[in-house]
Image 1 (cartoon, one colour):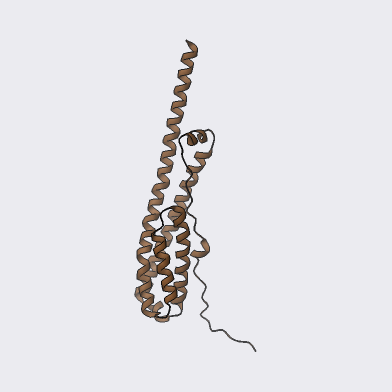
Image 2: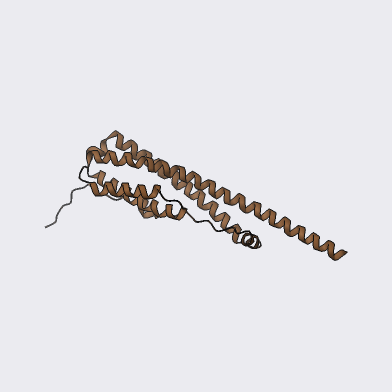
Length: 190
């Protein structure tokens, strides 16, 4: 009789353990998914802003078709990305294309002085800052979830209940850096 009672007590403890771990992992996964949803909103704002930037540049830089087409194509590809990994890759390409677009804008003083262009550039900067902050929050949530999923004894329950790792949102930081444009005339030394 004592053996049967011990068996049921152990079974109840294991059941409670799995319920607690399951609920903890679900909360952590939902936190990460919520953080990703916030990033997604800002990315969509960014994608909606890009055609306006291209149109502003196109009005002044009519001979820069390759750069403008590259930005439009990168925006289209990024807007169509479905997974975090695809989004990371597409966002790096779009950031690099936007960097080249701003490098082109440096060559057109009238464009740089345009209120519309400066407003759009300021909006993009604000969006980029929000994306960077939210990316950090998302990656922290993913780290916490993955750490909980991989630590003992939670790892057994996570494996049994098929909790998969979540991907980080990694962006090539060199693509986010503004290109250096030297506006000073070069002097040739003889």
